[in-house]
Image 1 (tube, rainbow, N blue to C red):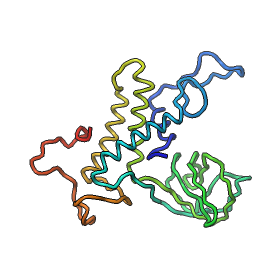
Image 2 (tube, rainbow, N blue to C red):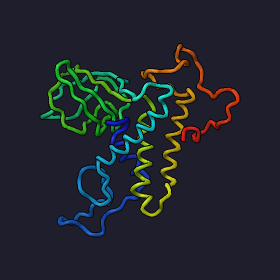
Image 3 (tube, one colour):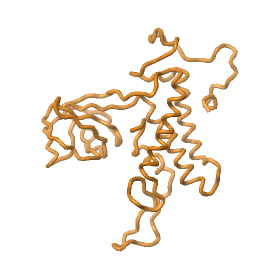
Image 4 (cartoon, rainbow, N blue to C red):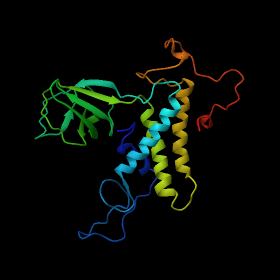
Length: 243
């Protein structure tokens, strides 16, 4: 798994594509979708393996840029912990009810553990205002109320950056370069958003909490100071500086 998930890519790219269906129906009279992301065969298919490849490229770019300030690659950290509100029997119900509310979202990763059994799942649906959700894969074990639920994530905004760089490369490859060898405006917009966040990390505006810092500037991590260019530097402090 990379810094982002297939769900992030699907949702990011889908916003730029026009919904369309096939001109001819299948044997059941259904007009199928013209775009599909996953393992099944379909028109304009972007396979899961290809998505993972572009996520790896995006992650390596992030690691290369931020390796001057942090030890890379980055590691997942627990950013929220709660417990199971009621007993969970996967044979009857796959919905997980939390003891206290957390702003969960589709694509979030969590660990469910009772000290003996532990499972890792991705959230596929959030219901009831954020305290109940369903998993993308089936839960294997039964858990009693009070079992620990840990949401794990890479430091903000690494997931955001990875998803947009990977989505930009995929969009330009599969949907733009078929008609033009140049990158699309949509792809450039996604890269711009990602590079803006990377520059925020480089300038010190954003701190990646829970990650190991390196370099002389981090001898005292409590100092409130930005990572500015040396006096007399002429490089523009825009997104161009990391290209």
